[in-house]
Structures are given as C-alpha cells and as structure tokens.
Image (cartoon, rainbow, N blue to C red; front, side, top):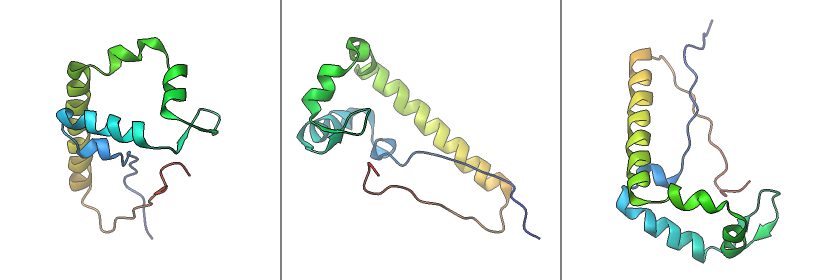
Length: 103
C-alpha cells in the first residue's frame, strides 16, 4: 500500500528565478499589465492598486529588502530540494496550479 511520506507546497512565481537586480523589470511588466485584480477580484489598473496600497510598502521594495528576500527564497528552495532528496521517494506527484495567474 502506498504511503505519503512528504507533502510540500511552494510558489511558482517568476520572481523565484530572478536575481534581485532584475526586480525592476517585474515592476515595469506589472505597470504595463492591464489585467490586474483588486483584493475583491475586480479588474483594475496598476495605478488603482498603487493608490490603495499601504504607504509603508515603500520600505518593502528597497534594494536591500529585495536582496534579503531573494536570498531567503533561495535558501528555502534549497531546503525543499534537500527534503525531496532526503525523502528517497519511490514516486513524486506534482499538482500544478493556475497558469492564467489569477484563476
């Protein structure tokens, strides 16, 4: 009988594969994207989201903060890889998610 020995959940964000210095490209793409959704699921623009954003968000998007978070994400991905390897699985089942990026 099969036995589940490990369960993992992780994001699939393109940001997880980006060095910190590329994050401004993600921001530019977000500004150009006309298909954003607000917290209620309604269509809105980037500027509308920015207007509603908490002003303290500025402290979260400094180069230093982004670098710290990129480093933390890389360490977490390494930990997931180590857990997978250490589990010595006979089979691995991967369940994908929303490739349209907003359901």
